[in-house]
Length: 107
Image (cartoon, rainbow, N blue to C red; front, side, top):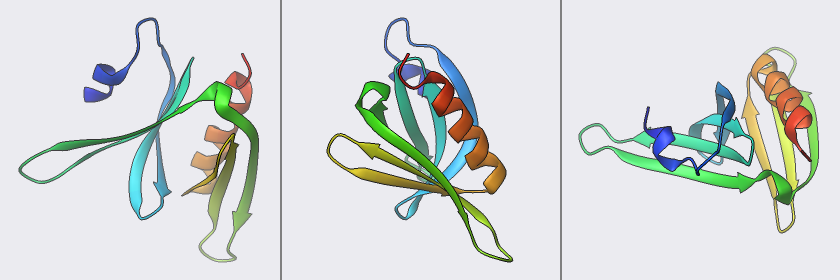
């Protein structure tokens, strides 16, 4: 998988495989010992990598909530030093992401 090309020396992946919506795009989320990575490979013929990298040390606060009665969605809100991002996905996936972020944030 091409995500390994973007890892720093001695960076290890703790969790992978959770799919989220950020903005109008779909990403796969990776939590490493250093960063929260949102990764997507886009394009049918000419493949392009789309990567958003957030240092765990830049995270100020993490919140989780659920919305919807019939089509529930989990929302993970991550407050950074300079902005707030919202990641949307299945409640189970977002809970897993929340638990893993809380376990590794601040280490």
